[in-house]
Length: 416
Image 1 (cartoon, helix red, strand yellow):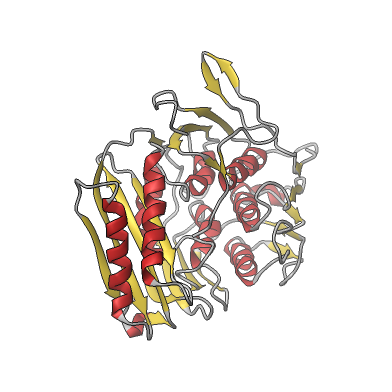
Image 2 (cartoon, rainbow, N blue to C red):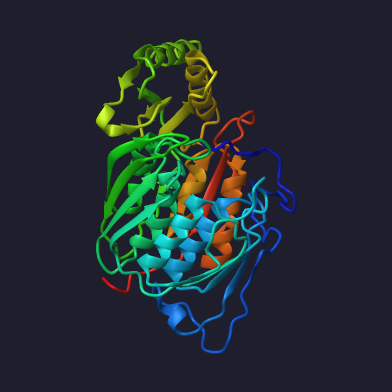
């Protein structure tokens, strides 16, 4: 799972205002976009603006998070809104800048989804241009041919297929449990039930699990288009009622590793939460459903109001099982301490959907992550959605808790 920088103090350029309540308006941080409106340009339904030869939006991929997230957010919004796009300095903030296989396969899938035009898309490229057309739906495949995350492929494609002309089936191949990305278990157990509150459902069929370094995993995502997205209100956390999870091993790794991860995680959680049964199941992945060797753990906390929080960790060569279990448990506990309704890894994944929804959405979070700041910045610039971030008033001063509010643009699917 990605490790992100949390913003405990106001980021550069943000000024907290005290007018009865503390309020933060995310500014046009380091304006990375330029769109010069031409006569006759207007926002239409998905894919139509491109046909009207509108202006090309310029995105600086080195801003804020400076990685693949900028590419995913800007490309998805470009496709949905029909905005021709140029992204420069792609992944300039990374040790190996430019497109990696998972980014390239994601771009190619979005191009195929909408019969768009894509230039400059090759491994190592630091600049691409993309001109979207009508989003078609249908069956599409994206194969990273590496352990690149299938969950990140899902992130870029899901907003697009929601506004397609027909149902979609996405065959995503690569790593299902990969570092620096959500595990497929997180996507199914946490992301899916929360994102469906926007008024749609999707099916995620895990055909094969794949791990670093070989990949080889495959998931099939099926979903139907919607007319509009419904705004969400996740501000009431409730109390924790269940803690459960799975500790897995695959390939040649012994089952004892799974049991040790689970036991270590339970011991760690019980130091802080003593009144709940912690049910973490050790699992040996079937050999016909897992490619290669891997181990890891995910732990979920569920609340009385349906909020979901997670902690997860993947095993690495030379790292003992106890350490993997404890890392996941500590991550979960940290996400429970801040009093928010979503964990640090779900924050930014909700932003694009909030921006597109028809009405005001609100979520309560812990410290606002750099990934969330980045998603807000580009959602404001491309979609023209309006976000407000303010310190939560109903938490004690010791808790770093915020409300993220968005006035969505209410985009309508012209095909339905």
